[in-house]
Image (cartoon, rainbow, N blue to C red; front, top):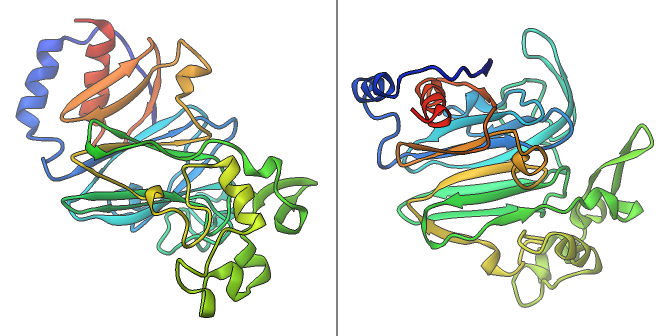
Length: 290
């Protein structure tokens, strides 16, 4: 649920609650903050999703949700658009659909913009357009060590998607397919004689993707530097680029790292899950200045 936050909570009471609740996040677990900065509702999807709202949920414009990924988690996060689910969680989406359930248990249908993570001692992450593009998406590591650069596709490929790759609904381009998905040839899919980094080279289509999204993987053997390596980081995943606070200076954005909430702005709505209850309370103390 979404909560309108009051500003009258005692900071001392909050600290006591945090102490007696035990560690919200263990040292080995990593925290993911997922933010929807789009001008439409997004349905985040996660595979495997047991620690992420059981794999999927609804996220309205300028809402956030916080999750804890366990040690060793390896998975994928993407956004679904134009979804319609009934009260039992059954329905469909125009892009990114993972079966007919709100909570995903399998990978999404292409085309989709995909964030990939492997949380070993050294964390690996990237944003891939190998399976196409359906929505702008960025990944920002928080206070990690190593090559902890922001990655993603802040630009919108739907605006300049070649007609032969375009997916349309209601007369509008809603996604952009990969050349491999459309043409299914060894050259575009980097297989057969093209199944290595020497023979699989950028194509006119992958170059369009790369020009719009220079920090994303644009084809299977794209620049290996598109995969980042980091340690000790938590992650902010943002749909449609940047913080929502950049659009509304009065809107608070918060992320969670090392048992501390960091916020900007003065008011907010925050979507809760099983880990975020005490964090929401702590936000109140941060913003009230007590």
